[in-house]
Length: 456
Image 1: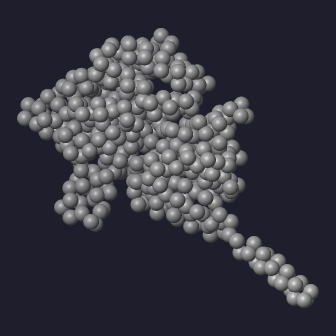
Image 2: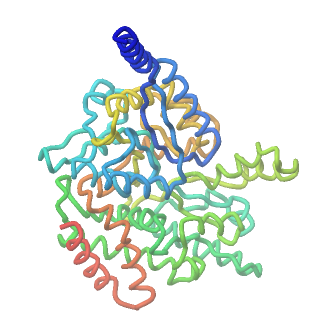
Image 3: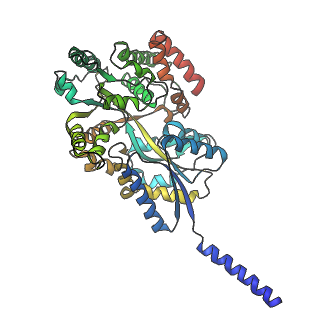
């Protein structure tokens, strides 16, 4: 009996060793599902390569944009986050706050050796304050970035009797040209067309991105690099009043559809595709990219694919914003999409390794390029690739905008501006002028008071 018991014990131990030997280590990764199939295919290729290189299983989950951030916030609050998270709205909504609260792993040891490979402006947006350590460090990986572009119908401009060379370079002349001359000429032909698709809905992220571009054009500084609010300084306040007045004026002069005060994020795209507007500003080149996607979509008819190709190469233009009102070139407001390793992750060591692997040029570049231009690279070499610098009429404009220089959002310096943006104090100020008929000065006073309550 003793022999049988001993044999059973040895068998149990051996089984335990066998189980341990064959248990596969796992890293849990959550990503936003790609807008295009190419993004997801590139990500799956990275996962496959990582698994083969390390023997570590990647438990990958893909979520829709809103679900991704909502699920992540809930998991962080519950203390059960994944090891790695990449949602394309983390930067706008959560990254800075999580870093401040000590919810993210310091990834300086991963980024420091490769800093020279990353665009300095993009890298700077991941250098964030941790209130627990009372110092800044790198708490996120700069995966890709976006900025605001002008998109217009070239054929509709020509129908109005104008050439692209007629478009003014100066700020006031630019908007006057579209609102007065182009819209006026199309209306004279009996067409109920609006020159500009101008997002103003409080619930739209397009609105705060577009408005802050106007504020940037007027040199309205909101915070300093230490996160201190400086909007109440006389010069900055005066510049913000001009920005509110300017942004509201597009609507006041009847240059955008009346419904744009209630638009959500897709609505300016829809109006443009329906050709009820000639021009819109958008935070990616997804409007043009839709037609690139359509021209290669075998589910469409040949006629539809041919029209999409003509639209992409001939009819639709991506352009830079005009020069600022002071005559200087626009420095573009860039949003860097961030991946993070969570401090409460069960396997954050492997999480760091996965992201270090992902950030390699041969892995990150196909992932970013898989979005067919919707996102721009954060690495130096990927930005120089022919994908961006070649003959493509839309991507080469995006490349020029980035090389002209970028500036970060306020939430990089003060994470509480994620709440300011979510509440959209910017759109509320514009709507106070348009709907409630208060002066721009009063609207800005209210804006400053609210910003101080939230982020002061």
